[in-house]
Image 1 (cartoon, rainbow, N blue to C red):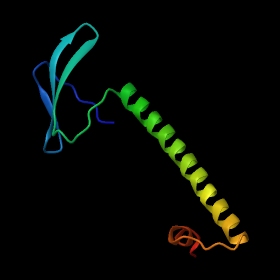
Image 2 (tube, rainbow, N blue to C red):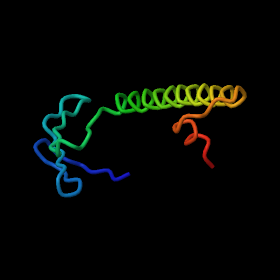
Image 3 (cartoon, helix red, strand yellow):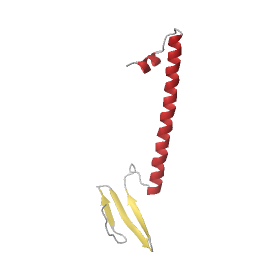
Image 4 (cartoon, one colour):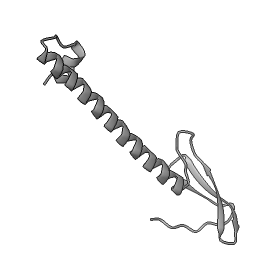
Length: 97
């Protein structure tokens, strides 16, 4: 970790397009301003960690739902093959190896 000392009104640059400026210092609180391109996400760390956790949960739920849907398709195909019916192109694609 790089530690820098800055006074009120002074800035640091990150790369060519992110500027962090010390706006105010009062007691144990420092107010900073961040000038960055719109496509750069800027979050307080606690919010960032919360977003990451919610994303992990969403992916896990999506995987579970997709797994269930695929199992249903495979079960339908196995049942239709047992009954002698023809598979759809989509079902054939899923089982193609």
